[in-house]
Image 1: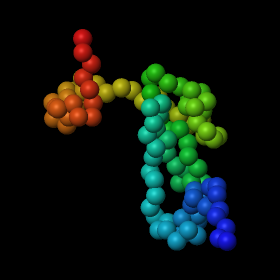
Image 2: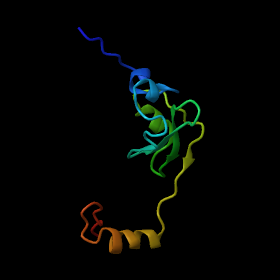
Image 3: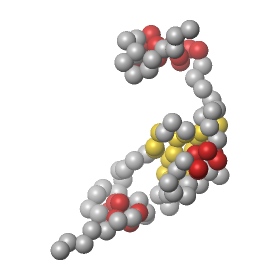
Length: 105
């Protein structure tokens, strides 16, 4: 019977883990975008941390809704997009509203 490893080491989520798993060490996820914030990975430890949270969330809310301990000490508030960015998204990027629905008044 083949033994299957679980956890951070098996997933290549600690320093040298990707190489031990036979994967290129210079690649991997850069960030995780959720409905509460954006998480990145520390260059040295490879551990996930909260980089940005949205105006309607908080670092505490992110921690409460994450299934593991996440560093929130570096978290910065991410401001919403300005009118020019909203116009660009609605008129140039997604005019058919395939991804972003425009609220009805």
